[in-house]
Length: 414
Ligand code: NAP
Ligand code: MG
Image (cartoon, rainbow, N blue to C red; front, side, top):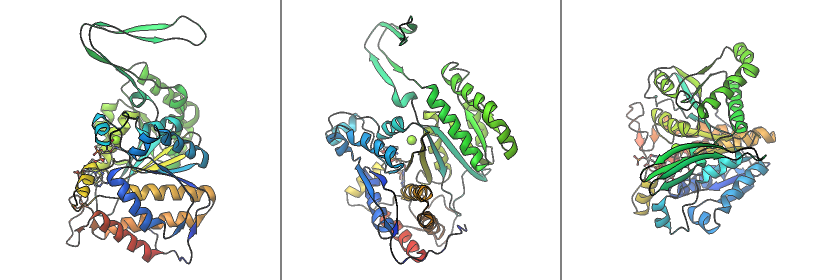
């Protein structure tokens, strides 16, 4: 792949004008985060990092205040970059001796920032999507607010009636509906969304598709969820008719709504090059499918764009727990740091664009090119080796070995 970025003379460190909010994380990704910073960023950049340690132990020690403070800092400075973090479960509570199973930090940050997460595969020239018809990447636009991620759940022990009740603030008569007359134990879940958040989700997706001149698909299950999913469909349709139809036509692109199951079937037969807008849970699941089709969970860019313009860049995968335990046992690991590297390059590029510092943008381009050229040169981690084009020069390297190889490529470019 010709990345078009080759040389950037460097006599002193590049100044990043405005602070970047850095959120450290857990397990294997925390280890890779440190290496990426030490070898690929700090030697070249003079950055003011506002550091928030979202390590599970620190979230516990601060009663999770650190997560909220990090989100507030993103709203203050505009751009943040986040490592993967453990979402505590009962097992994790025992493993780390936590006070409780704190909420998902991603959930907390997304709820505070609102907005849409855009996820696009990172394509290396020697790794071809498993779906042969995909000539261009499929980008996911995942609504980052509400639904099951801010749910309220109850486990009921025995018979009783469950109701859904809305109490209007103005004192009008409450609306109530029976959910279920339980005759025995069971489970209940309450989820919500807001028109304001769906409007900004729709607007972010139409804007993204038009900027890149790609078709926008949106899919829900509104045949079953007529009111809830139906509301999403209505808002998208109304925005399209009111604001976007003519501009889309002028750009030669389209907006297409279809049921989620139909969309899943169609997407695998499409040529790609689409923005696929999805509700929060659907986007969570489908972005991992798309990353895997394109090589690995680590081959994905991910950015949360808030309606007020704040951006949070992240790795879409988790903390790679299994590799971390191997690392703790003293075994060699081969974990892929691409998503973490691209989270940093994304944040730096955005910062450079906002600050009007083209040298920072160019550094981000060089960093991405160095990483891609490493893989294209046959040096790759274990997740990519089986999916890369066969070539005798291909070689599996360790977690450290990959970052060192990227560092060498980067040095040669700067
Ligand atoms: P995961 O960390 O995404 O890893 C699942 C599997 O995918 C790994 O075991 C590995 O497969 C492969 N994989 C993922 N990232 C990789 C990478 N960078 N390089 C190479 N292989 C990679 O998911 P998980 O193990 O289910 O979750 C671990 C923790 O992450 C959980 O505590 C969860 O809460 C958290 N999580 C955080 C985020 C986030 O903060 N963004 C997202 C999801 C999950 P092999 O073992 O086959 O090599
Ligand atoms: Mg996920």
